[in-house]
Image (tube, rainbow, N blue to C red; front, side):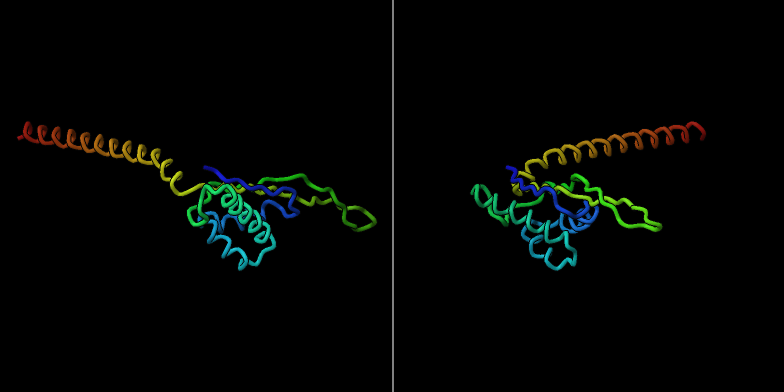
Length: 153
């Protein structure tokens, strides 16, 4: 089950919000809500609001407990840009862009994430198969070395 929340047209550049999102993406949503007020950045407040809405959506659906949620993804996309001008030397205008952001938070339950872990188990089996193949190759090489040593003597 996925719970989504979005906030669009935030007047903060995506680069600045991504910096804060990187700090909290490994945490649970509840832990992120606790830590975000102590990050001394304006974008932390915007991200906190979106995470709070996502948790409220999960509670409203009644499908998940807030403590059983984890982040599936936190996307910070670019929104439209406002073209602005600043006064420059000799009466010239210097252009700059006010960048906007869109935030999308997707939460999922821990149970769903663990069932998706089947793929990781398959990868582990493949690596174990590769390891056994390497061991067999090493054993063949050693047996050839032993045979060549016996022929030389």
